[in-house]
Length: 106
Image (tube, rainbow, N blue to C red; front, side, top):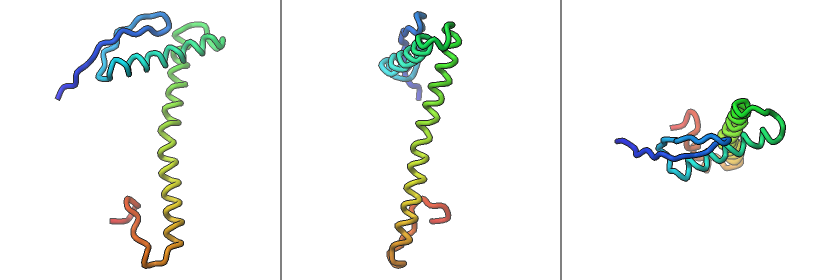
């Protein structure tokens, strides 16, 4: 099965790029705008002057955001497991069903 690629022209820090992607044109434009905004904010803050260095710092910043966003569901799942364990201890033994998806259960 081949997915249909779209070509979208975007501008990042004054440079035009043609991006070919499986994503929708709207998605590609939004991603490019986010990158452009991040690079420009670093440059406007006086952190760096050269756009290529700002692009690297922007990539690091965006990657950090990604890592943090990925960590949230993992932390939430761990909290839910802990709460489930606590609640199961409070139930009478006859009401303690095995936890679905818990290690060591069938």
